[in-house]
Length: 79
Length: 101
Image (tube, rainbow over all chains, first blue to last red; front, side):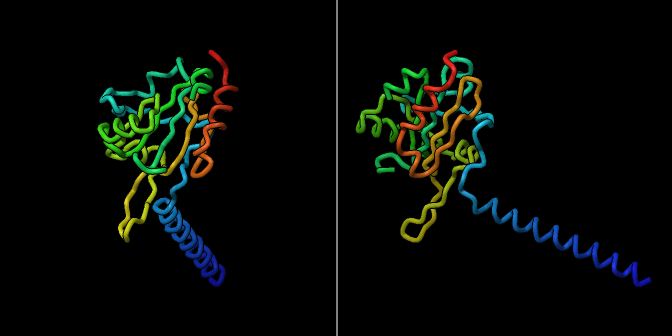
């Protein structure tokens, strides 16, 4: 009987631990501003308008050119 | 930039500004590469570089300054964030080392 009680406690503790870890991870997802992309990952494709209102598809450069994507904060700033 | 073009690379600047604002910005600073508008922040979210900026006690989510080098297979070859992303020399070095075909 005593053994079963111990088992229950361990199970409850493990569940609580999982919940705490889950909660922490969610918070990190919100806070994190560093990209999760790293060298070796596929670059997500996109379609965006350039400054001449022309559509640019990242996938158009596949097999043709290397692409440097320089994200900047805002136009007309030092960013 | 000439070095980047020589290494078989194209360059895109990306921000949340409108095409009109980007065009005025491009003319002002004389950039030779296209500036792309991610006005709905979709690409910034996908690339995980939306960052909160506090301006006069209000928060705004704009791009974190980041440079990605993507090779011809669509694979990311380098990621530089914040201050190190200002200097393009590393991106040039990465592109120069990539295979020519």
